[in-house]
Length: 205
Image (cartoon, rainbow, N blue to C red; front, side):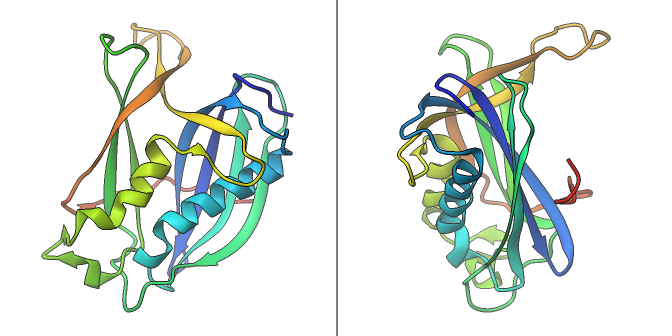
């Protein structure tokens, strides 16, 4: 079971026209609330994310599963399987055309900036114009999910969002895992074409 101050990650696996794509985000538990089970935590996260983006994505897009991993304690990963379809009307952009949110993090305000990103696929075509975002405010709810969710609902547990980075300055040395607090999330208003996509089958741990 996770406790306050644990650092965790969740991986969201979505699918569009049979092609899967994954995004991984990191967070720290500020308050464990009513001590939810890992599966309950993951359900809260998935529903919070889904509510933030469902009207922007077409019915061909769906969330198929999610994984939760604890980076502080040695515990087994938790996986849930879902089928949550986009609710936006009309056709979607193809899987390799995504809206990107750039994420900026620092351990302290004066420290080095660490960068992350979140790629959102499945956006309906009516929400874009010439491969640009039509109305940036349509993504405010997703920005909130990525930046300062506070709590994901459910049992009231509260979190701070993080970016994972390598604390080892020498690229020839082994990776040293470290985390920095997210300070800002910016929506890139130009659709991005991916040359490849990070994927991971739900059944593979």
